[in-house]
Image (cartoon, rainbow, N blue to C red; front, side, top):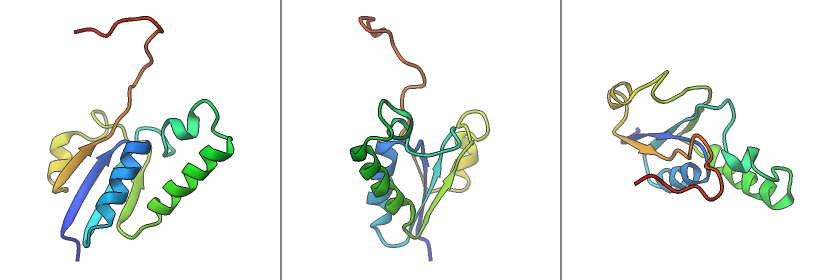
Length: 112
């Protein structure tokens, strides 16, 4: 019996390590929601996705994804396909683990 359902928005490193910690608890189910069709964020599509150390990290994420209670939903954009009120009706908690949607030019200042 599931006692806690958690939606995780995003599927990069922070999302996967949070999912792992949650799934170590008895009765927790994690549904990971990602706007891209594939998980792992910049680990998959970053600077050197074929580097051996990156492959090792992906293997860790694959083990997390294989844990009981884990489900991945790709091609689902938060704010477009699903919104907070949709999730609140189905989950006990929502964890936002999204990265930056765009880059910032080197030397540019953050707006305050």
